[in-house]
Image (cartoon, rainbow, N blue to C red; front, side, top):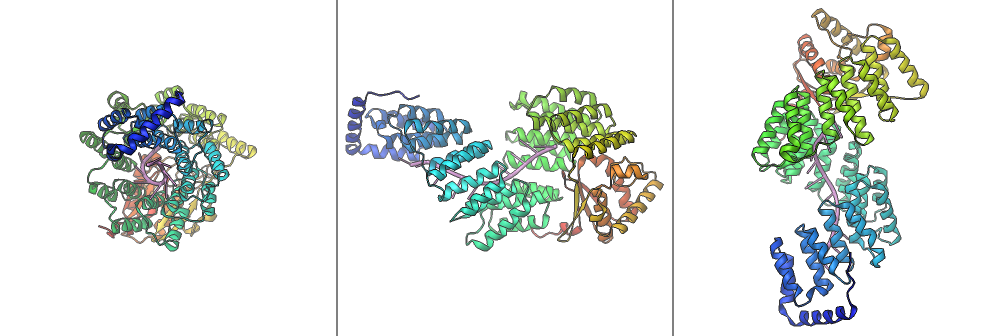
Length: 603
DNA sequence: TTAGGGTTAG
């Protein structure tokens, strides 16, 4: 990598360089030009001028040239200057390492960092924050911890920037406790360190604690939250499905004039969709002056969640017409939209165009969408063949087989359900979920004994399924209901009586639903009820029906996997109880919200 | 002359 230079020659050239630096006014000028340089061709010209008088033998000047190339993302040129330096110092190393991080080569950055000791250059706080950032990008906890130890050894643990990077790194590596430990030990904190810890909780599904920290920040600090922090707070509200808090955060965004910011707007599009108000998502999206790929993707995904597949595809066409390049996440959204709206042909066409037209190689997530798309529409054999051909990391493969298992249960294909479950159980992935779904698949096909046998096997082998839960937000209060657990159900006897009445009326009207429907169609027998249990969304629905006055719109967010089965049921329920229902899908969220979400606080 | 935090995915 480094060419050894004759030391005498270096000394002569360095003297010449110093002489020139002291006596040539243009040297200072050239450094100023490097600082202000905006394009690669100018950088190359300045580079050529610097070579002749030997200015590049001066480390300070060469460092300026490296950082100029790094700023212009010309990492090869930066590396070339670095390689030709006789004595790169910590600034040269850090500049190049940061160049690799910023151009998407964090592994190369870590490799370079590992070479510093053999060149006897000691990393400083700038180097550490850069390489910690590389670990964050890679979610590399092992190296992150090693570097953290190095930070402690060198006594840099009180540096604000290094600590903020560490908090961020632990958060990105899903070690929230690690992030909290570093944060707790910080003697001095600022808005960045607070943002890092809030993001650590928010990005790891701990929205409640993220919002609590945000409240603490507002109490403890004089600084105001900036757009970075607000983006994390909005994300926390989205993950909680907490519309009221989301609107409060939106208010803060408007007051500080961040509402047209591309990233903030993307977070709000996502938040409103996850909180059941896709019309607000659309309003936020349409106000963005020049939306980039991310708000477009957020909006495509938002529409997809609500079963508005055609809208998602129109948005996709719109972004292509505006020459905005889609990314891999955009295609997950597009394929998801096609899958959930039964647009199989369109979905397959988009899948094929991914690489051919847009140069994006499909990954396991895209394949999972296709398995889902085929499986949902009953093309189980094709979905099964595709699933077998996918080679990916164990957790990604588990997603594929979990998806296929869900589809095979939906269509009563016990043979494929057995195969998918076995693969999940054998690979030790999603084991409890696989047992439950397989048991339900057997129950659905009438094989109650086998279903019971599987439940017994679960008990015997100590496999426990975390019970699913649904919750209802009425006014500002949350009510949580656990699957099959009547004791956790507020007003339980009233709720069960109401649901049974509802079921009776629906039967009279000829509704025939599967066991996953919201009414007790298939749970008349004790044995069946024991297996299927009371779905938490049924309990939540019953509670909402009792609690919300007539004439109020109730928004019901539910998992679209059950949407087709339930959509008709909801229409009937609306008719029977004389209340209007709006059925919306939010993955894994089961909300019944009062009409208050239609208020126009911010519009 | 070198450093930190935010958004979209099943």
